[in-house]
Amino acid sequence: MNPNIAFPVRPYENGITHRDEVLEELGPPLKMTVLPEGYAFMYEGLDTQELQLGFSLPIPVINWFKFVVAQADYNHHVMVFWFDHEHRLRATAGNDTHFDLGDSFAVQPVITVQALFDTSAVEEEIVDFAEWPAFCLLPLPQTLNRHNSVNGGVAGIEQRGTGPSVGQRTLEMHK
Image (cartoon, rainbow, N blue to C red):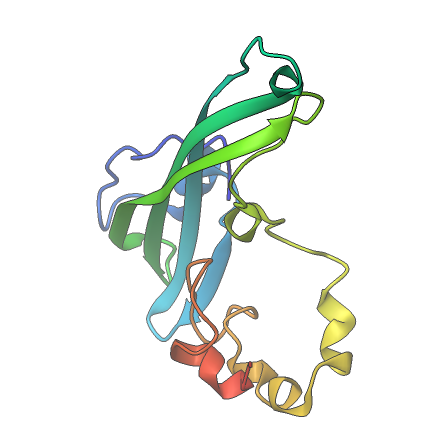
């Protein structure tokens, strides 16, 4: 995810826009894949919002605690650009999705400050460069199907957060 990308991005002209224009404006894509008719870039953006209201009461012993009401949501933005072999844009597709993470209530000691929602699954590090040789240590189904993995950029692309029992990942036999 490139946090500097403002979604929605400007409209691009199919057949006219060159790959270099997209790279110059949006930077390197999060993911890319090879297609028979060319290749595709995928960009993602994520806006997370958590609103908290906390208060404490001036009553002995109870004043050691803070009562918190919170609400959280996030917007997930995706753009896919398809280029032909001459690096000309052929098509674009985009999607903006709003997810309501819900409401929560907590009682905290006054000295504690923490987020009430665990958004680590959608905010984790995008590229782990120490991960690339680790396929040698993966379970056998994942190692044997590595050439079909969406992580390699040859067998397609997928959005983060897609479950392991959907699509291409079913070949890897995740539990």
